[in-house]
Image 1 (cartoon, rainbow over the protein chains, first blue to last red):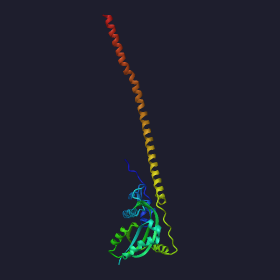
Image 2 (tube, each protein chain N blue to C red; image 1 turned 45 degrees about the horizontal axis):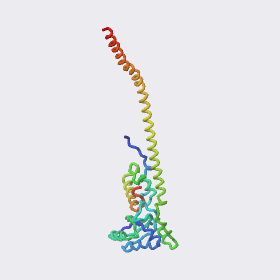
Image 3 (cartoon, chains in turn red, yellow; image 1 turned 30 degrees about the vertical axis):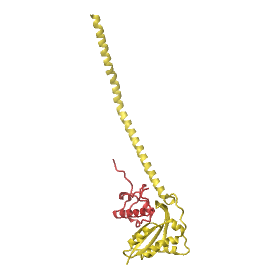
Image 4 (cartoon, rainbow over the protein chains, first blue to last red; image 1 turned 135 degrees about the vertical axis):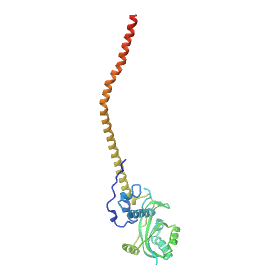
Length: 70
Length: 204
């Protein structure tokens, strides 16, 4: 069975301004409808930026700014 | 020499509703008690929570930048843990204070500045409407894609079934033609035996 291709969110995302847990509109783009963090293949981030994204989303979840499960 | 921290603290709306200055003092007093030097302190936002915390659907977010001497972090955390007005907190070590933060904080320190009383707790309202709409549209897009894929698969199956029918039709005709011959043969054989049987007694 062929792997379903998903388009990356944006391009050259690593050039974006610094990822911040308070920027909910930005973080919301990298969540699935179920509230999961999207993979690097989908987010188009480098390793370091994906780690920063993960950390920011987890901080926002801790403060109830983002849901754990939608 | 201490470390500069960014502190985001969730305050209970019941305390904020009574008096914002007092609610702010709860946090700032706790910070100063543990020898923190507060650079900025302001109300960041009041919003619906993504999930309820201690039965609260809404809370007020308090953002502060302060310098804390080394070794006082654990004591401060414990004091905030025990404070019933503080729902959650997050401390992050930062290198510098953002430039715009001091302006925002000084605007709040102005005596003319007033903070609106937070609305009553209720079912989760407006704050996540945009996110919900985006998620719903995403779900709808996924559903449409699945429906389109199913329709395409059904069309392909129908085409393949048609093809197989058209291929098998000549064979079926050939079989149909072949069948009467084979079916007729036993009858003919029976007739011949009957005649032969019938003939033989007469002859005898």
